[in-house]
Amino acid sequence: MTTPTLVHLVSDHPELSTLAQLLRRAFTGAGAGDGDPARSNRVTRIVLFAPGGDLCAVLARPGAPLDLLVLTDHHEFDDTYAFQDAAERRLRTVAHRCAAVLPPIHLSVHALGDANRQLAAGSRLLARVLAQGVVLDERPGVLVDPPADLSPEQVYCEASAQNYACRDVAANFLGRAAAEAPRSRRKAAFLLHQAAEQAYARVLRVLAFYAPRTHDLGTLRRLAEPLAPELADLWRDAGARPETFVALQAAYGHRRAARGWSIDEDDLDEMTRGVEALLAGVDAVCRDTLAAVEALANADQDIDGPQVWRA
Image (cartoon, rainbow, N blue to C red; front, side, top):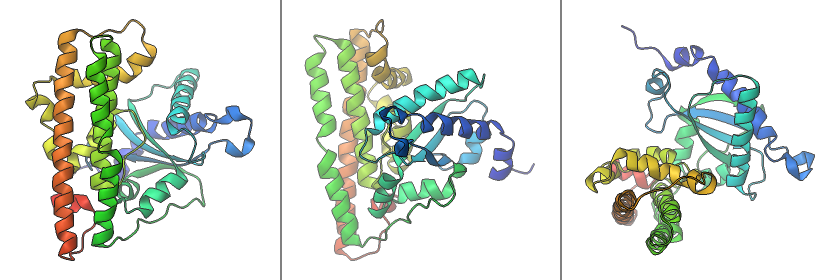
């Protein structure tokens, strides 16, 4: 039996074209409320990709979640999270009006200038997403810069700078969650979500010089674990069930929107154990990565990025 090619699989999924059209409509109006026609926030490129690298397997699985990188021309210093939230609300509205059934999707949104800046910093992961993903939609004439070639010393300096910038953020959220738990388990779960989000973002920034601006833990985890496979079993080893991660992933939205949502003490304790194990694992990965990259830099060996030594 012949394995279907990626081109055939995409052509066999006309809903991808519909999805791209709906995304363009959603993002075009997401930032239009400021009255500035020049900031209509139009999409410049939509890329379908697979964090694990096997897009054929994803498309061959009915109902599988789709990962999409969306590059836009919104101002790179705007609040990307608010911009994405507005676009996702519009996407749901537009899909409802068109009676379109959307597959589960995970969006990673960047201003074009922000993406180019990360490529200039040497992000091979972002470059790989752009090179290996399938472009569902793009605006003609808008180019994405190639990734920079960094010397071993530059790779080590960039990895160290990324680690220094974010190494304490997750731990601070974890500490705040512990302090908040006796007063509000809902808020504690929200803060645990933030701790996990920052931990995954840290490992991505240190190993790949790239982390998407998203609150979706599933997206961050799927990007991080191929680079650091030892993170995959941390939740299980800490005694946290798979549904505990699902609850943690949902805690961000529940805390903000679901007034009736609650979490009991045992579930919060299990969630805390999982996040503590994640932070400890990320600390070890980043520490070992920096040591290995420093050794390669001192030996003046060519390296393509911190994640290469782990391949």
